[in-house]
Length: 219
Image 1 (cartoon, helix red, strand yellow):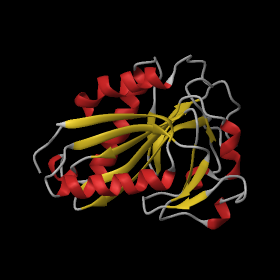
Image 2 (spheres, helix red, strand yellow):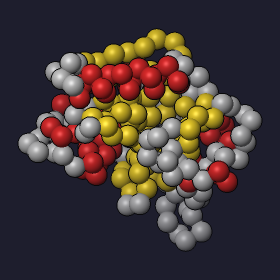
Image 3 (cartoon, one colour):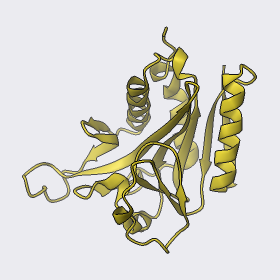
């Protein structure tokens, strides 16, 4: 069984990490069900294990938290749906790379509920949206914006941390970092793309698409 939990208001980052670690230990010990935790954080930046300090452009703008999840710098804040995924990866293919791809495909399926087509790009973890309304890149490629970031950590084959989907955050808050170390592309949100949705709408879509993508597999 997978438990779903939705927290109202803004959840303190350190408290969230402590709660995740406790739950991961309980899942690994067979004392708790898997958990999907949906929440919002106050404005903050997190630095993953691959973060380059030169990508922190405005270190005094918001609190910065060092975290042991994979990835580089990310922003969390109001209007962004953070999806913490405490799942047994041993029972979901026993393959971390495939599990991350499953998370990306889950986001894509969720975006599809709102008529959006998300993309996975080689070498760029996360989910991307084509922006034909923007000027092409200098090499002639179509402009793209990132709509969802993914970064996980594993303990005893239980995942934690997870996904952030931009629903209606203040996109100017991303200007204090180089998001995920990528300078050539921008950041967008569902509302920025003209999709008038709420966090509640996204939660419903996440639940509806979960079983079709994040199914258990034999190890």
